[in-house]
Image (tube, rainbow, N blue to C red; front, top):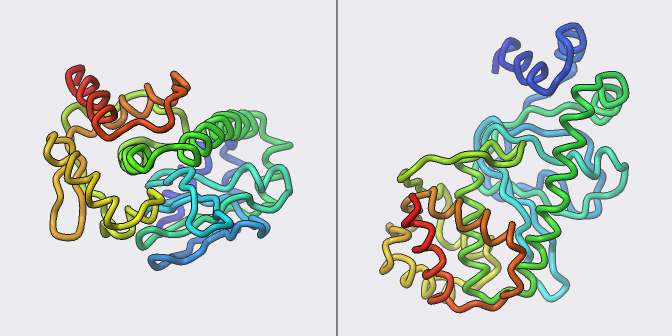
Length: 260
């Protein structure tokens, strides 16, 4: 990645030209293979990190095994700001779901900019507030939710990660577009917090309804806008139904597909 590319990243955060130029030599670049733990739960987050390419999952490990996937971060996304700013150990495991290329700003630089650069501080504060609410809602939905809800919301997370700049609240999607999830179905099942057999069963129902296409080892989400509309509606309405059947969820998805 060129210096001009990183400079544009920094000024895009609200940093002044002069401040970005001063920070530029201290910005680090790194690569992670699939399955690498970037920041572990209980550890100190040492930098604010931007994903240039790839997907990173943020999850809460469960005592009984498995995890609750809180978010999936895709390209053009910053993550790790909340524990960094509040100076407490991370409550999430951050793990690379695909090969990842990243840019990192150290804790010291983030804290200094937060105090000295008002536009930067505003950008980060709004991001923390939005994500905190989003994470809390998703933990409740998935922890108390039926396996069908876990699968559908998990797939919706992938849709959001690959079609939204998740460094800000979503505003618009791509009508009618489809996208292939770039990880194996076994990994997607793990992200959704269900067994491989349960995942396959639910995917068959979604495929028969024309909502996904199952390839040899991967999945393609058909009409991404349908998935994005569903996710927004389900979370925004704070629905009390946490154990819906797959038939009920498919009916809701198909309602959203009519609007596309």
